[in-house]
Length: 95
Image 1 (cartoon, one colour):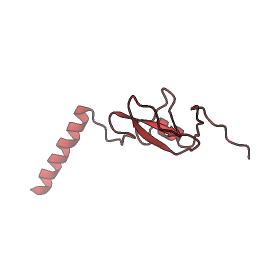
Image 2 (cartoon, rainbow, N blue to C red):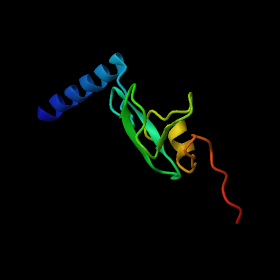
Image 3 (tube, one colour):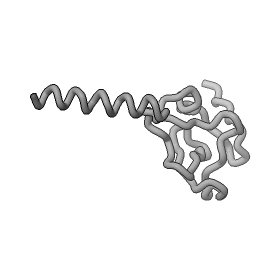
Image 4 (cartoon, rainbow, N blue to C red):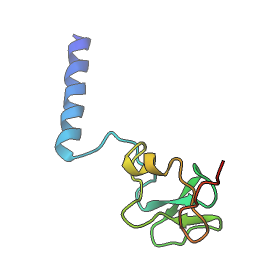
């Protein structure tokens, strides 16, 4: 009996998440925050409150290219990119 009850509860939870549009994907920042990219570092980022400027050493992501969920298109794209203090891509140095 307990296994059946557990199966029913799990089904109800999954159905609720599907119907309400909740995502099981991990968000990069909490609600009311957005990510900013570290200057001169491919993997550095932090979250700041919406409507506030990035802290020193960070720049906003370019409009339309902001990662929202871990491992989404833009999260993967920015994982090896470096921005300068103006938010421009830094060219890789010649080998």
